[in-house]
Each structure stands twice: as structure tokens, then as C-alpha cells.
Image 1 (spheres, helix red, strand yellow):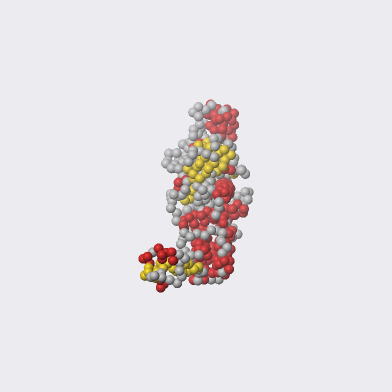
Image 2: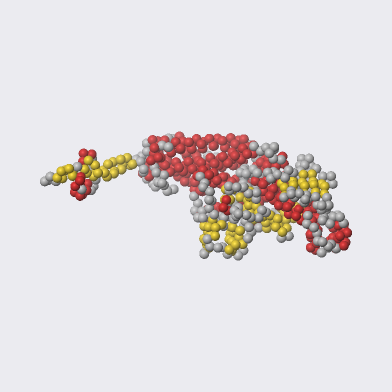
Length: 583
């Protein structure tokens, strides 16, 4: 067996005790590939193979953990909804953003209703004020006059301890002190432990619900803050178009209001539970006293009206929270399914990026036609590892990993043409080649499109400036005349001569350069071809194009003699595919 790094594309030996990142490696056994995920145990064992998964080294607070987990949950809930909503052939209508059906994710659950019912019926308040108790007897050594109930061994203790004698007579001993039983009300009973731990569980549940609702409100608020002054208008238009695809027939204001209303309810009952937590009963139950998920059938939980209803709320919580209590097999199955769903989601996003540009992909995403004479091959798309190539030349690699990306998952350095796509980043510093693509991120699609388009242009321009061989056959030398570097497209007559006089290798190279010379004349944004007035080229390879479509008006410049090898519009790095530069 060998280990394949999806990040570097290299095969590695399965060294014993090696530490790997969850989701970024596959185990290769013959032709079979299995992506390795952490099933919650932190390790992978098979035969004599022992591998360990990186653990998040940051000290996360409980609040951070809840926020991260709920953001990931709502991300994959949304992706599942998006996958069901759009078919593969509906790229035009597809939207990668949070769907309006997200309102179903925040609708009151049975547990929400149970909590509300518990407070409206005074269950929590009554138990807090008048908890059930048991009688506890503690044995103490005390003055004889204070003893009301003797300990079972009081006589044996008295005989053995003369210091407890007041006087010895012929008939016996007159005691000064005796061991007696002292009765006391005991509040730490099983049923009150259930009460205390239920408060903890419900507060954690409501914190998660609050985090989910806040994610929705944040996305809506972020869209409302989009500012054309901070970004070029093409960028704002594209994000607005993606938003419109998602909310074409939905009322965003209504969703926002529902979210605020539900947030108010969640905060209201969180405050009430915190009030119970500050009560004397809760504080009397040590935090280290835990209760199993399945409750014991005690008489109090079965017959006391308040405690019986408390047990019903506990069982409702147990049912709702079951999806968060997974064994290793269930955890692994969930992560494998998430990888499939996320790969399908990202693939559809990439297809839509190409469709928006005017590039065409085949059904199984194994090739991209940039124009009629220029195409790119895509390897391994089913494994969530897109490798863009042309005639064995690597252009870019896209690694899709459904796991949250942690700081220690990344090596110190890796190829800047390798892009990692993850639904959640838990890193302290940002990387230009890592994209947090999820329904919660308005800007991620354009960040990804920028990386892809920039890589394609870098590859094309590298070939564009590459000279042909030093000595060309005389007929081809004459045919090319002053266009030996093929900076301008060839005529049909020139093409016919080349096909007739050149060997196959030279023909293919000239055809590729000719296709690129045609491609660079097209607007990188809208795809419209420039004419002699809107596209200028020089013998040095310098060219400048300005789209003659007034609604676009993009400008792209290539100059080998400047630090900025290629520049689109303002050359910035915050406007997706609509502005970038290649140094």
C-alpha cells in the first residue's frame, strides 16, 4: 500500500506513526483509492499500518467550537438542499449561495417547543424552588444529650474509647459522648442531577441554534453592505447575479425577519436557563456528576408531575441531539458522504464559472474548450482533485477537501499553482491559494474563478511569448514573414503551407500558438473579440485590448518588459476574475 498526497500529487510510503491531515491523503491499494478521514479516534489502523491525524493546536473556547461546528452543519445542510434543488444541466439557474429554504433550518424544533412548554408550565421554576430531596443520615460523635438516634455500632465504640466516658460505676459506664445519627436533607439525588445536566445540554443546544441563525443574518447583512466604491461594478454585478439566482422568487426581508424573530426566542429562553443555572439547586450539583443519555426509570421521574415532564424534555433533547453523537463508523460514513456532496457542489460551481466566461465543459468534467481550437484536459475530477493539463504540461491543480482546514494541515510551502478548496478555514493567517468556498461565503466563487482564470492566462502567455525553433523550413519562413512568433492569427493560406511543409510536432506547436494568438484578442470578461480599433499588438509581443462593449469596457495589457507581465483592468486582487495581474 502507498499513501498519495492530494496536496502535492506525490506517492509516499506508509511509514509507521506518520502524521497526516484528514481528507488530504488517500490510501492506494492497487487501483483502489480511499480518502483517509479522521473518524474521531485521531488515528487510522490497518494491519501493521498506524497513522495519526493532525489535531487542531489552537485553544478553542467552547463558544468557538460551537460556532465552527454549527457553521459547518448549516453549510452541508445548505449544500444538500442545493444539490436537490438544481440538476446537472441547470448551470444557468444554479446558485452556490445560501438557499431561501434555509428558513427550514431555523424553524422551531420539537425541542424548542418542549423548552417553551417547560417554562410556561413552570416545570423548571418549581423544581428550582422546591426540589425533591432524600433523607441522609451521617454518623457523628456528639454529646450524649444531643443524640436522638444511635449509630448501629455506638456500644462497641463506647467500650473501646475511654475518653468518651464521663464516669464508670459498678453497674456500667455513664457516657460523655456517643456516636449518633444526624439526619439531613440530601439534594444531590439522581433526579436533580438530571435537572442540572439538562440545563447544561439545553444551553449548549440553544447556543448552537443561535450560531446557526447568526450565520444566516451575517450573510444577508454582508450582501447588503456590498459597495461598488470598494469593488469594480462587474464584481458587484456578478455577486448580485448569483444572489438573484438563489432568491429570485423568495423574499429576503421575510427570511431576515424570521431569523430575527427566532433569534429573539432563542436568546429569551437562554436567559431563562441561565437564571435557573444561577439558582441554588443547580449550584448544589457538582459539575463532575454526569448522567447517561438513557434515563433510569425512577419513581420520581415516573410519578412526580414536574420531574416526569422534565424527563420528557430530556428525551426530546436526546432525540434531537443524536446526530451529534456518532460512533467512529457513523462519523467516517458522514465524512465520506460530505466529501461526495462537497465535490459535486464545487464541480458545479467550477462549471458555472466556465459557463459565465464562455468556456465549455463536457458532462463528466474531463475537458474544457476555451475556444474552437484550444482545449484543456482535466484529470481525476471524480476524486475531488482537478488537474488541468495540456499535452502533459501542468496548468493548475484544485484540491477539494470537505474537512475544515486547520493551521497544521498545511506544509511550510507548496506549489503556488495548487489551490485548496475547503468549506471552512480554521487558520490564523490567510493564503492566496486557499479558498473557503461554501454557501455562507459571498466572495468565494469569485476568489476561485480568479485563481483559475489567472492560471490559464499565465499558461497561455507563457506559450504565447515562447519562440519557435531557430531554423524553420524555408517555405514556412517565407509564409510567416514578419509574424514568426505568431503574435497575430495566421491566415488560411499560411496555415495550409505550414500543414504541408512542417513535421507533425511543429504543426501542433504552430496551431497552439495560433489558437492562443486568437484567444488573447477576446475580452477576458465577456469573451467578445477585439477588432483593429480595440486591440493593438506590436512585434515585441506587447498587446493591449479594450472591450468595445460599453457594458463591459474591460482593459487587458500584456508587456514582457514590465514587472506586471499581464494586467486586467486595475490589476487588483479583490475583484475576482474581473481584475488581476500576473507578475
